[in-house]
Image 1: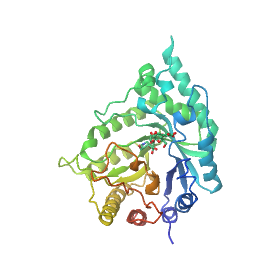
Image 2 (image 1 turned 30 degrees about the vertical axis):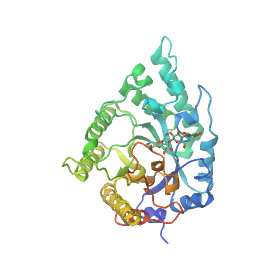
Image 3 (image 1 turned 180 degrees about the vertical axis):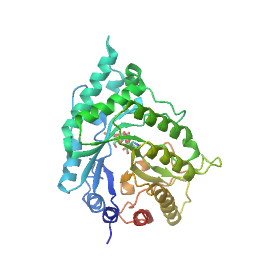
Image 4 (image 1 turned 120 degrees about the horizontal axis):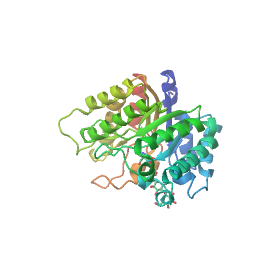
Length: 342
Ligand code: G3I
């Protein structure tokens, strides 16, 4: 039987998914087996974030990430890193947000970034072929660069530039990625514009950014229709990004079925159809090298525990290719068909 990995390989595409060091993810042998069969790439869902790797100043904790990447290595899977710096203050460790930057704050900010990015990239070395260096730097509300303790002391664009330079120094062999969650719908217009502005500014500065990570948490968004065509908006965005010479990765794919009807068969069909539309367009860009899912089965999906936009009927989300019992869903076949159609 064709797996996602085998079909994608024929098209020169890598397929992967996020894995967590938890009993229901890496610790679940049946689930890990699905991952190893379907995927050629593994990403740590949380274990390579700053908070996980350096929970206190100068204290590094590599155990959980090493457990995941060690397993991946033994299974012959490649490894992506997510993420060296996650820009919104709420996703930086509290000790970073509350840090005393002293009399020379710019120098201290630079020291913290250098210590973190340098230590982490060197620890993983050439095991990690691609790094999300900066994640979510653009505020979707207005398209401006988000502020955090680092941007306040260094300047926003200067701090992002510095992160990429430090990453190149620590991981000269690795692909360096700017990762964000802008979508094609009207509600994301300012987000897309802000990301394009950032990418253009980084090009002008000569910042070593190789690729743009399209998180691709897609879904049926019932609250953002204003008459514009999301597919057309998305194509415009991808044209602009590739026009600047960036490669593309789909880095966190899943489908939010919040607004789809209640019965399981129509929900699953709806999820598959949304995926097919999105993938047919996005994978038509030869610049896309990787397709990474944010979980392969519903029992591990972050959508299940995300309470900002739950289903109104209280049912749990079904946004990944396999169900809770690891049975394949229409989404798996839709992804495979989209690969075949490339
Ligand atoms: O590990 C602790 C546990 O000890 C504690 O008891 C429990 C109680 O809340 O929390 C556990 O940590 C949680 C962690 O997931 C591990 O399960 C955090 O609270 C929770 O915030 C964290 O959520 C993750 C989220 O990023 C924030 O880091 C999700 O699993 C993860 O899927 C999600 O991934 C993000 C990407 O990194 C960036 N793009 C969006 C994507 C989805 O939100």
